[in-house]
Length: 195
Image (tube, rainbow, N blue to C red; front, side, top):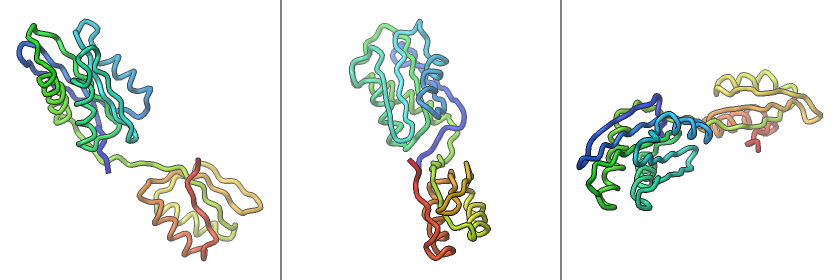
């Protein structure tokens, strides 16, 4: 299970006369990444390098630093710590001393890591959208099981198949709920992931 950041955090340090300012913030959508970047990036700085990870996907940008020397190590850090729903930006104010690719990797990855160490984290809960179909006479049993597993009913309709429910539930609840529904309905109630 991955971890998600609860609130923004920051860290600043100087490395061989360059100043590195790191900022991390939670994100829920790709659109959030632009908002976070605009909040944290300094147009007057030499470089505003970033990386983000969301729903297991990640992206990064070196913003003019040598390829793979800034954004990639930050993304690798997010992946190695199994962090998700987070964006980190490290802003560099050049101090006149070149660090070389290895030095940049250590500086960007180190600043990002120290920033993330300042953060408060929680387990990320992944929600799934599902559809459930069951006979009308199972309504009471179905609703009791949905309450037990914390499923959120999005809609309910009725058709010749019986009642049709659109649900949201946590990934960890899917299989236990599916098993209990099958037992309670003798295999008549069907639960599957929606597209």
